[in-house]
Length: 431
Ligand code: SF4
Ligand code: SF4
Image 1 (cartoon, rainbow, N blue to C red):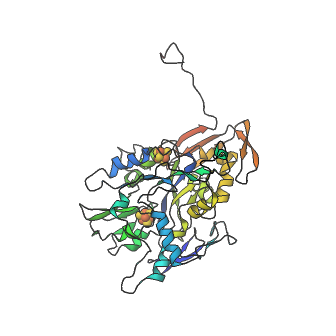
Image 2: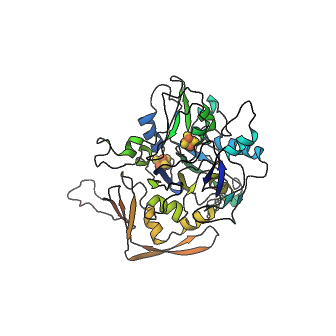
Image 3: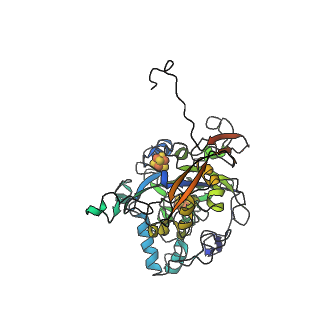
């Protein structure tokens, strides 16, 4: 197999095709700390794309409760187990080899799904990626174990009052919102024997050509995130389209301003956990240095948002701010060794990071640039750091501005939310 560079692993890896990169890449950051599991995103996607015959079990956007939930059931623990069996004791990171641009999380020493397939492949049945085909029953219960916690503090008198103290809760769960990651090295694309899957050069969105697809389900088997799905009445596979008409910004009905707008799931998010963007990609596949782009800033500049299961090797373009209260080994398994740094940043954000965090779900246009205007200091609060120590955070009433693709200012927010009191004589329900 050809060798390609994966910055999330900090090394080259095997992949069935030579490196080829889009000019811009669809990317997003989800702040898990804010997700309330309301499923508004899920229904926004469902009612737009997958409400037709044969798509009854399709949830291109799903929100599962971890650690027990999963759609399809056990998708991640099952693949982690398969990788461990392929490389017992070897799925480890060497964090001493960090370098900001080329290997921000260190170097992954284990096997990716492509390398494990290469090692295990039977000559008569070669596979591009290690994976499995979920059963119909595993797809059938998208929100199994919703809100089910785990932990060791149930039952005893000690549990009362202390099970939900930081830095780590003793009883915990969290909501994990997921869509297709429009991976840099998609396993769905690698697994397709018909070359029916392609990655668009203009935005890195990964699509399935419905005319070429013959429904072999190799993409369903190969995608480690299980975001390619089989439609029985058309005998083809389908997947999240990244709401590409919205990203193109050319449809006057969707985007009267003619600029890219956020996908349906992003634009509907009630908890304001989502920030979507497009990042510029250099010819060699690296992200072009652009610290004024909010996504670049959060992922590459500050390291506060991390890829989901980077060890799978697909270089996913969805990034997560990990939940503060969850035991660290679980988070490191899910988001890699950048977790401590990310939580250190998020627990006590400086004034610039705090300002950028206000941009999540602030309006529909995709933001290509932000700026911060400094305001007066308005307070101090004591915060608990991941180490257990307390620190004093200074709060400033700064203003953050966001700009769309054309450079127009489309959002202006202050740290302190303004409150307006409606005059009682004009509004009957005023208090
Ligand atoms: S998440 Fe799965 S379906 Fe989406 S691009 Fe990656 S491998 Fe393909
Ligand atoms: S709409 Fe937002 S807050 Fe609600 S479940 Fe989806 S991601 Fe979470």
